[in-house]
Image (cartoon, rainbow, N blue to C red; front, top):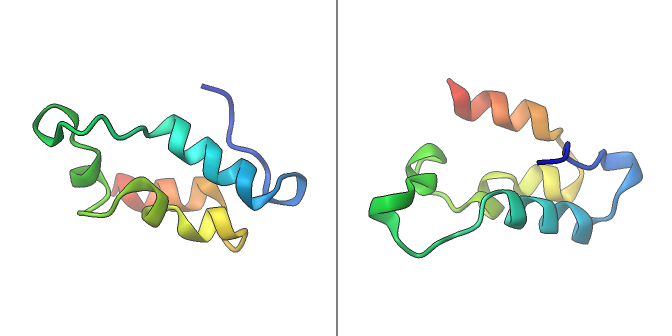
Amino acid sequence: MDAAPEIKLSTVDERRSYILNRYPCIADCDACGLCKVFHGKDPENAYREYIDGTRSFEDISLEYRR
């Protein structure tokens, strides 16, 4: 997967598209586990600050790795 678009060089739609493509919902929670990784949030909500351009993708990713 390509690196996340930089906030200064991308639009909200580009960042949202990146998150949705990187973490697609396959509608099978037992086989996926993404919601568990993101503490019950869907990826779009987990990365809302990145999508809005107020926080880096890396910073949010590190938070969820703990």
